[in-house]
Image 1: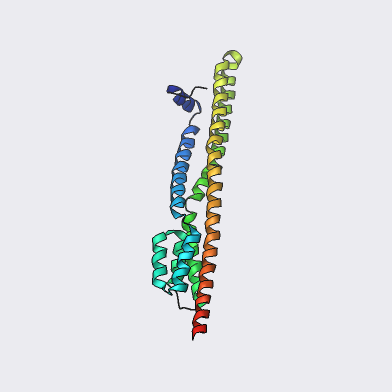
Image 2: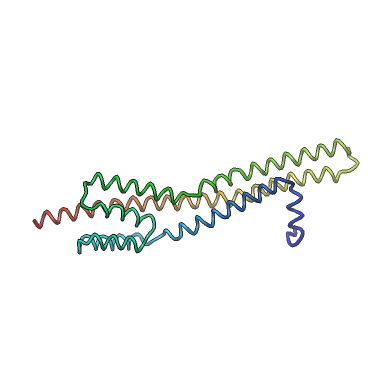
Length: 216
C-alpha cells in the first residue's frame, strides 16, 4: 500500500477517532525511548578501568581524595555509589554499607525513570486498537441495519476502521515492548555492576586496614 503523500492522512483518518489516542501514545513513548537511550548511553563507563584507577589511588597512594576525584571524572551511577562510599571512609562498615545501599536505591530509581511510561504505552496501545476494532464493527452493523445490503461500501468502511486501528495498535505496542525489554536488561546490567563495585570498595577498605595493621 502506498503510504506517501495524502495517502498517509487518508489511512490515518480511516481509522477513526481512536487513531488520535494511538498517535499521542506513540509520540509519548518515542520521547521517553529517546530520553532513556541517551541517559543510559551517558551512564555507561568502562567499569574495569574505573575500578582499577580507584583501587590504585587507595592501595598504592592511600589517597581517598584522588579516588573521589576519579569518581567525579567518570560520573554515572557506578561512580556515584563509589563516591558515596568513599566519602564515608573511616566510618564503621555498617554505616558505609547503609550509605552505599541508599545511594544505590537513588541511582536505580534514576535508571528506571520513564520505563513505566514505556511499559504503559506498550500495554495500552493494543487495547486502544481493540477499542477501535469494536467501534468499527459497531459502525459496520449500524450501516448494515440502516442501508441493508444495498450499500456494501458503508459496511466496508466500518470494517476498514476496525482493521486499521488493530494494526496501528500493534504497530505502536511492538517496538515499545522491545524498547522496554532492552532498557530493562540494560538497567539489570548496571545493577550488577553497582553491586560488584560496592563489594570491590569494601574489599579495598579491608585490604587497606590489613596493610595498616601489618605495618604498625
